[in-house]
Length: 355
Length: 135
Image (cartoon, rainbow over all chains, first blue to last red; front, side, top):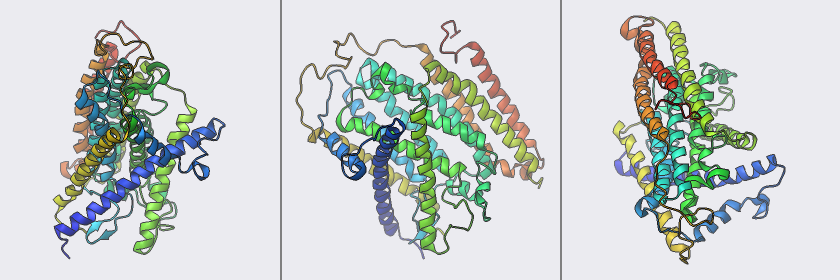
């Protein structure tokens, strides 16, 4: 059956709207999760007043932020000042488009669990996250505030430095998969036995070095603790979004959490077998419906683990010093990532059949 | 299986960019019109913890930020060169007819990259704490 362009567009439009809405809800509830967990780590309750267990807190926060006064300070560069949060949030929400979050199930010739199944998925993902730096840099420069400018400079320098290590860490995974298409990368890690998780790149492919480099670089990329220098409160009040208020501030905030979710998704896809069950055919579903539900379940469970790890790390580790941060990225992560490529290449080269 | 041309796969990506762009634009506009505006002069000045702001924020800052940006461009281009090689690596023995030819080619290339990193490292560009660095 040939899919008509009209059907294709309509189904995709619905899919995109659903995914973006779910992503925004996930962002809101990740904030709540973080406040709850950090609260428990610090031996307090966290939000507990709005709704049962504070479950309505994100909605209350959102309503409050919309109703706040939207300041436009005198000194700002207006077009860029407004554009910056749009770039930051836009990039954060766009990158979800190439991520497959469930098994490949077709409906009217359209893949239900991935918005855009392109053969350069990983490259697009890296590209979109790189463009996100513009949001930070422009926000700091257009604010015309010393804290903002310093925060933005720090953030940009940090993000581009760690992007290098991040890109190099992913080369090993691409070598194993022989493709940049995210579905291919997951399919390489698929096993059928009860210990299918040994096929994951993290274990089977011997890429755990790459995984830890990726994880550290990604924490720095998203400006999260222990690498949250750009918004070190004690030095820079709030960093690059000092001058922002109301929803514009919230957009930077949402962009940060959306980026966290994206990082969790990428780590899941590249190193932890994506939507596949860790136990092979056990709990991976037989019919299309059970496959759909279970694959999404496994994907969400793995992403949730990474979000939990993010928050746990934030609640545990103190902040780096800026010179330590830059030194760590350039003089430790980059050489280790290069060594990882060489070792992976040698190992694969020796184990591949000659032809 | 897919029964539409491959190029169609890019359409949803463009749609996503469009929808997200409209949504962020809507958020900015809505927050501007919903929130009440009560403009006071003191409130709209650059925030410096309550002290009157002195001068323009866009002054001079450390040249290291510039160095980092330049190094990033250099090394990121080198990292991008590695990606096509990584994609085709599994097939290289079959193409070149030699088990490790592709590997040694990349080792030579990576050697240049490592020499570059080592050079900037020893130049002190990456050592943010010292002010004796030869920038």
